[in-house]
Length: 112
Image (cartoon, rainbow, N blue to C red; front, side):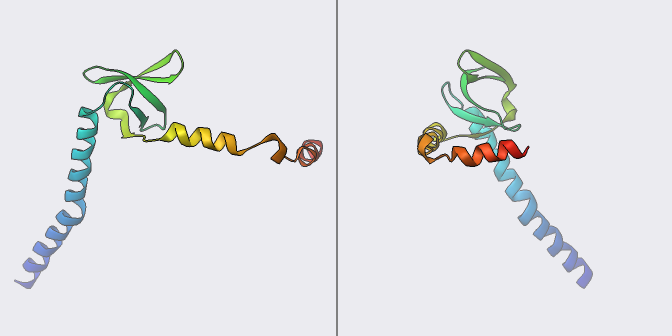
């Protein structure tokens, strides 16, 4: 009888710690896919960032560069990116030409 109780507790723990969170993630992902709109910045499961240009049934067209669109499966979209472009521009502005030690870079090139 004690073994049966332990088995039931183990199955309950497995359900609570593995199955329920996975179902929650699946529901959140389905909600994300339903809410995709043109102009949303997203990232795919392969790490490609782009802006949604068009949403079809099971296909999303991502603009990854000006005039360049990729056709990807809708299920490949993993997350919506918020404020990514603004952060990239700030990082580029932080590095000035004056901050770069050109002599040290030349020494590295000479050693190669």
